[in-house]
Amino acid sequence: QVQLVESGGGLVQPGGSLRLSCAASGSIFSIFSMYAMGWYRQAPGKQRELVATIDSGGSTNYAASVKGRFTISRDNAKRTVYLQMNSLKAEDTAVYYCNANYRAWAYDFWGQGTQVTVSS
Image 1 (cartoon, rainbow, N blue to C red):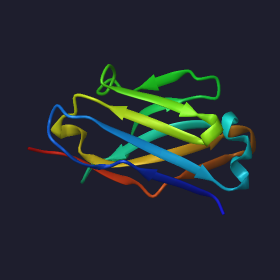
Image 2 (spheres, helix red, strand yellow):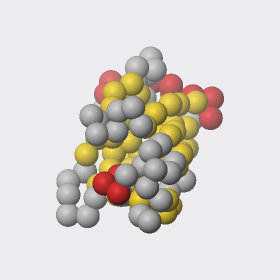
Image 3 (cartoon, rainbow, N blue to C red):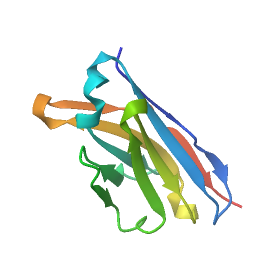
Image 4 (tube, one colour):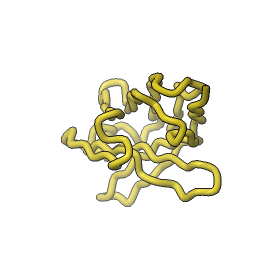
């Protein structure tokens, strides 16, 4: 069974930090290191947007709104991708989704999402 399971969301005050994790399971992720992994988010009434991506070589890409505050990383041995979020703002409030993409075989998988709420 193919699964991407996010964790680490919650309620945090402005200026605080959270670390999201996304663990991949299933035989299809035996080549986890070859997947491009990403974090996306969707706020109420808005479209889903890219937050950060990391490719199989470790190159990263960030949305302008989070650059300098968020860091994406991966641990291929654990088949896990992380999103360290610092200096959180109210506008970071959203459901955060993990994505795994392997273009060579047209694989594209999504997790169920984890809620992040930034509020005082």
